[in-house]
Image (cartoon, rainbow, N blue to C red; front, side, top):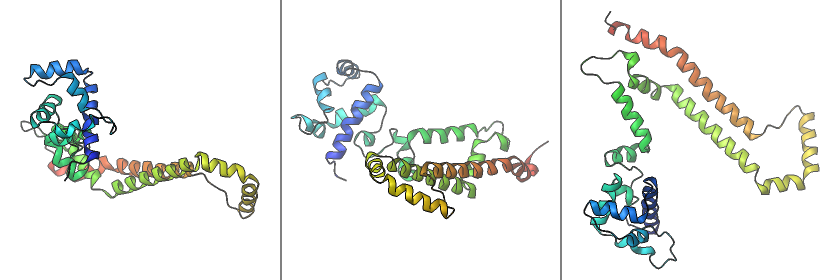
Length: 233
């Protein structure tokens, strides 16, 4: 996989974002790196973030030394793959999970927290205290597929609604006001009514809410029946 212009631009963008997250100037960053034994001038640090292809120093990231690359990764606590644009996961230990499932670091951390909330070797937990019990059940249920499909349909129809509201569509409607009014009369006469995409989007989302609500209502009783033999009174 080649380190092309797009990835080089992404490296520069991520270096800038990481520095700004720590609220560091180039001078401050240079000083803190020096304290770790890596000497990079504030001028070079600035050059590494130049993201304008027209700028004469734009290609500096391509010639960054391995020492500097590792230093940046260590300082910002991210993976080298993340800096190079080869992964969207900042943490090395999340890289494989991110690549396989397409999850961001925040989502992975939430799943790890679910696992930690469900583990207690000294005192085995009841089913209703295990986050993973609910998570596994929902993700493998038919309702999960229904909810996800309804949400995607809602998002798509809302996208269509917003696209229909852009300046070009608005202008076309203004230019054909009379024709649209006549068309609406025909629809009314035939018993049809036009519905905006935003309303259709709401209907799909209500469907998602309904499917989730139906699943959750049955969950307590079903879990109890499935686990009653395992409960130690």
